[in-house]
Image (cartoon, rainbow, N blue to C red; front, side):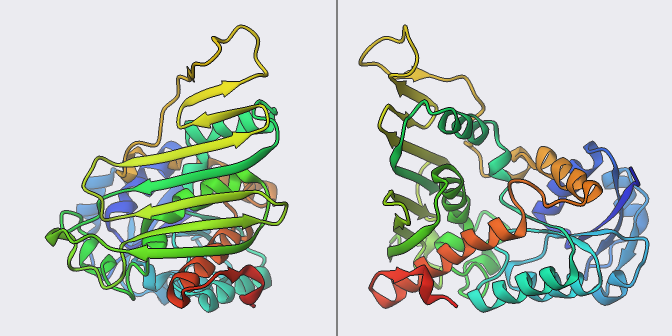
Length: 345
């Protein structure tokens, strides 16, 4: 397999996680960075242990024929234009979440990628976590029977103690509670429910804590999902909580239920009736990107490029579908009424 060369665009918090994952993956090497801060090659080699070419102009970097993949680690409002330009330049793209801050820009990205035929991996790396893999396997093997209700909730206090807060608190930066972080929970739930969403109803509010007063949008939301096959679900996106980070799952089916890392099922003989069975897994209990499962995701992405296939769990079509639900939910909260997904054209 040809070794693929990666350029990291933006050198913030998440870039460190990207570089660490690429360093540990096979068939790939980070060879360049693009940053307006213009770091010295010596400084970068000392930090990352790699000789890296430095670009300050994104267009110049895209013209480098040695680069196969661009990994977009820039602030949210830059994602759409940069992704479209990368697709037109024939580069494969790792696109951090959210892919865009509005539906029109998400459509622009999707159309540019389809036209260019490049491969895209969206930053929903939680689908590669041990916990999601376990839950997905339980669902796929029928241990819960027919699922009729599911919820996934994201509680993460994102305040001034995070470097990103200076821009993510803004409407044109973070966008919404769902776009800022709750999208991980919504995307995970969609992956587990395995049906398209037909309609959403969403409501939003905000904390009165002084540390969160800088938000330009409501920093807590709850969304009710109506699926095409009749299932229902709920996603809470709370980025102004005063508590430890918590990623909650609940799935209810005709033969059992899941509560975070606990299982109750009628499909396994010998379990104690009336009690949950705790499953040993690594739960999604940290907002630190260095703890997130980028390595298995990026290895799958690299393998998919080599095989000429779409990455299996977090490709652009899947990421676009999740973002469409997010944009419908935010529109519902804004308009104060349910929104059908068919309203977004």
